[in-house]
Image (cartoon, rainbow, N blue to C red):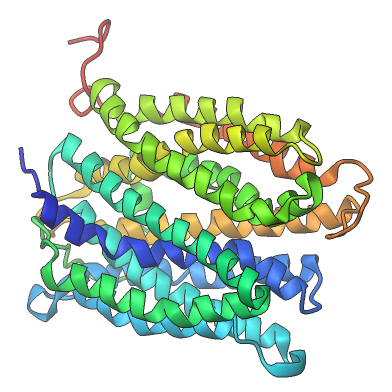
Length: 432
């Protein structure tokens, strides 16, 4: 068994912290930030969807690039380092809009493109690097969990710091200060991964760059099944993230406790991750992930029934659904690393190509969540900050819609047969 030392694993995981910290401000804070500047929710949701879809189609090309950079030029680490300035610039511009709101739509679109492009290049190269660090079934989950744990720390920082800064300087200035301080954190953490992090055990695939080659993972049946489940599950997870600020402010009516709810959710996710790693080693990754989906629905559906002042009840929902969320961080990417084994040959291991499409699916899930949820809310008559919600629209879209989608993902996972008998652990009753 090939096992990374704890210092090597920590060095690899370091870059995950700032990369994950970029996501929360973009998907949670940006819609509310720009709605406060005068843009309506339908326009913001449509813009998020349009820019994300346009950006997503660059991901397969970035995946091929991650595989094709020769090791003598730094390989996937070189691409990771090159993406850092783009991410930092986009994050800074996103929360430093022009005075007076002139050209606000164009500014938002430009900022999103920079953030998305930089994060795409960084994340694809980074995940591809991690996928090729080990050939071992259990060790791959350990690597994914370490990356996920660092990501949760980054998300917690992104959740808490803007709220702390907002209380002292105001919401707009707090996000501006957060975005300005993001660059040094990004440089230091990625620098650790690039300078002292482990190198891939398996070389990238130097395959011919063709249009059909960009989509070659779709010829892998197991990848198609895994990708479908991942996309559906991603939409289910992204809808509550997009609507959290609105839900806490207008349903619970305790916007001052937003940071606390986020911290509870992500700390529970971190606490649950070792459980899912051990369970996956015992019963298989797909089975463990399926159980997590069912538990997530059983916990989160109660958010629909809450109302003003139900702080303790929602805190319980956050903790229980957060425990289930730990599986989403540890298991899907580890499953993907196993699936890539089907397509590893003399041309090398095409982790970048696979994670290029994987990242595209992740973007599409987030974009679909915003593009569906925000216009749906407006169509149902919800107005942010309003004292009345005519049909309980916000609670319905925040809680019931994602639970229904999550159950669809669980059904797809149950039918997918993602793990062969030679990969997953043997269970009592399995055929030898």
